[in-house]
Each structure stands twice: as C-alpha cells, then as structure tokens.
Image (tube, rainbow, N blue to C red):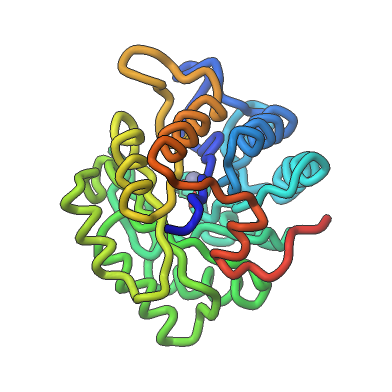
Length: 275
Ligand code: KMH
Ligand code: ZN
C-alpha cells in the first residue's frame, strides 16, 4: 500500500470556543496548530479562516497570513476550503483561490448539513472547477453522499478538471451519507481505477473510519473541524493529538506515513506553494 496521507482539518467554520477551548481562531493559532499537526505526521492541512471575532471568513488577507505563517515553518500541503460556511455566496467562497494554494476543496453537490443546507448547484460546481483549473489549484472532491461522485466525474468528462482525481469521503454529517463500513465500500467501488481517496468520519465516527481508511488502502482526514473528542466525554486537546493517534495505529499495522513530498508524488501535485 502507498504511504498514508493524513490530512488535519484544524479549525472548520462551525465550531466556537464554547464547543471546545482548544479551537484555534487567530491566524497565528491556526498556523501553529497546522505546524504541530505536520510535526505529528500530517502531510496536508485543510484550512478555514476566522475573522477577529472568531466568525468564519473567506477573506483572502486572513488566509494569506495563515498560509505565510505555515510556509515559513514547514512544507505541509495547504488545502483551502471553498466550502466556507453555509450561507456564504459563491463569490465569497472562492476568494482565497487567488492565493493559488496547492489544493482546494470542491464539494460536488448540495447536502443537508445538520439543520442547514450546504448549497452547491451544478453552475456553482462548474464555476469553481473552472477557476481551480485555470489557477492550477488541485481540487479535492468533498463527497458527502454517493451521487456527488458522479457529479465530480461529469466535471472531468466536460474537461473542467484535468488534475489527478482525489476524493475525500465526508461520512456521518447529519443529512449526508452515514459513516458505516458498508457505505465506505460502496463509495470506493464507484471511483475510477487511478483515483485516490481519503475518509473523514464526523464526530464519534472519526476514529473507526480512520482505521478503515488505513486498512483499505485509502488515506485519512482527522482534526477538530470534524470531531472535538479524543474519546467519549474527553475533549481532544489539539489537532496533533488526533493525528498522533492515527500515526500510531497506522505504524502498528505496517502502513508508512507519507511526508508532504510523498503526498505530492501520490497526488501528482507539480509544485509547492510559494508566497
Ligand atoms: N463548512 C462546511 C459548510 C469544505 O471545507 O470545503 C463546508 C466544509 C467543506 O467545511
Ligand atoms: Zn472544511
């Protein structure tokens, strides 16, 4: 099996300090969490940004500060969110693409998101894909339900995506595909032969889905964005703590951990981010 790519989703858009006191909010805090996750074994960091009062923002100047701080310290792959937060406009969501990160998320369909709606109609998806391709930003397809895979492949057939195909299965969002082994196997079976995939289990499903990702030859996403607990009733004290556990389990099972350079090779990313 290929070395394991671990993505750390360090902040997200929904959580607050009331949910967990360990959530990074300022650019310095987010960059530090990203760096510590890298030291723990993450080769990709999935980034959201927060404004001065802690609310989600897609302001490229905030992303720029986060990315500069991270790139000063390490060569981890930076993947910005184009999902942003529910309710943001399409124009707002794509703003940080102007920074030309190596990767960005691309959710290929709409999905109920708890009590909200995460809206991604075909016109928006196509526009995002075109912009990423024009800027040479590699999309990671965020798959919240099975139909989103076919939507992603439609983009490829239309020539709107030309990069290596990498899918992240986000499983266990209330409104999306449940986090079960059966559903994961079904998702994997829908992928083209050369595609790669990772799995992000939400909440208490983070650990079991990560273990399945390791044993099935996929890759793994963990972090506070998806899950704030280390175990039932015990908050995780950092993103790195969640990454470290995946590293330990993977090594016990004989799976090597990908460095950022190895992850670039697996994902066929040509060049690294430069400010
Ligand atoms: N915050 C969610 C509405 C992404 O980063 O692309 C969307 C999200 C997915 O987190
Ligand atoms: Zn996200």
